[in-house]
Amino acid sequence: AMRDAMDKMGVRVGLEEDGTVRTDVDRIPPDVKGEVIKVSEKGLIEISLGSHDGILIGHTLDVYREGAYLGRVTIVKTSPDRSVGEIIPDFKRGTIRKGDRVATKFS
Image (cartoon, rainbow, N blue to C red; front, side, top):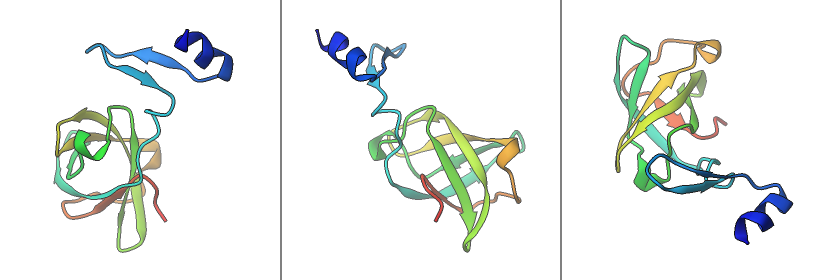
């Protein structure tokens, strides 16, 4: 019944591989700010935000330094207090390095 009601309201419901039910609301990243902890040569970064902060696989975050936009990452792995993001080449505007800031909304 809940699924039918959500369908009528236009809210998508999905089941993750681990059995977790996700809705469109879950797919909206929370308003958080963190820091780049590590940068790999493979286009991945580790950040100081994790699942306890509300970060989920598939969320996107912006990377910046001193008010300058550097790019965007898509989260590909999470743990309670850390996440790994893949740099999206089309959004890259500078070199991302350890200590840069990440946020769900660059402002």
